[in-house]
Length: 420
Image 1 (cartoon, helix red, strand yellow):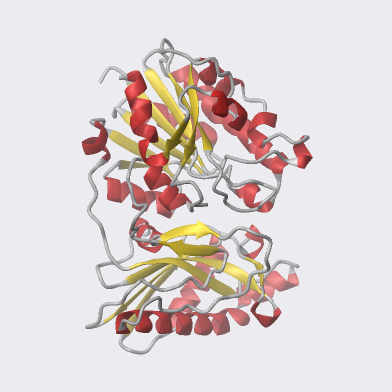
Image 2 (image 1 turned 90 degrees about the vertical axis):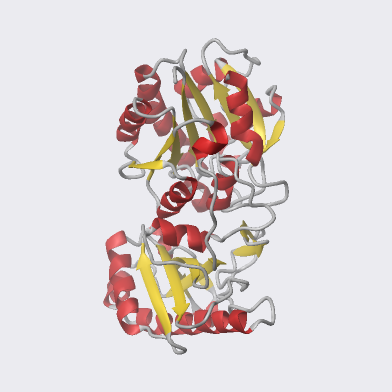
């Protein structure tokens, strides 16, 4: 193929006007000459990544932005992360995404991410002890691992039984809508929730009972674990509970990205959920280094384009400052991505033959400290294509763009049609 495509999703980059930035968004406040150059050479629009009214998690947001419609029924993030973490999984098992978190008195959740400073090494130590010391009845087998930082994955299977994932989350910050993980908005104080069966089937009741028993037994193991004792002495929040969400109990066969778009797609990624998405959509995977290794990501993106028609790049770092409510830091992260990833990349590739499609999987407004249902900006850029006069990659400019407002499942297809 003569032309190449770079598809970049900036995790949670969408935002709302923030009082600490004189009531503009981090994208608007950031100095982004590379993004500005791309915007001046293209067209813009807005995208509801899943659908209006849904504040999605990253997994379903990415699937929709890749063109896969799971809005009526979804396999669950737990399954995607289990696959991405190379855990054994088959239909009838249940898989859940988890967070090591900090629990206070009366089951009040103090921090859903244990201060966001739990190291991967600490989490590995905690998960190893839980795997060794927590057992469940009913011939149940546990697979439990930590992945990156506070993140973890749980798979439960029962010999001779099939479990149902039609259960509620123990993580109260997210609810399930047709299997989709959606953020609960508002300022209410969260408490650890009991897992409840959402139907009367015995396999659903059993699944909920096993989840609740795992949660309680894991709490006892974590309470006096040496890692948490050390963290308390250092003034850090202990990782003394595991919050579970987004259960799934079955696999799905999806058409490949090549089958959908006629392009040989590869992907550059960091996180287990991205690895799971890549496996399910049959994209060749390349490791992106650490989440902040932007120069390496730029080099790898250019190298991948020598072997493939298109590369999908997911950049995680724009999301975390949103969850922390730090608009100034989010602005700086956007500037770092522009200077250290996009600037060297656009110097390396031929901008007359390389299309850039830039968007997000969801919005994470700093004033909300969580995901929202706000649309995200979409940019399609190729030197020589028809332009619409937008000149920056911001929410405000995107609203003026000629592409209008799109659904996530149509975003990439629409972008490709503009340069075909």
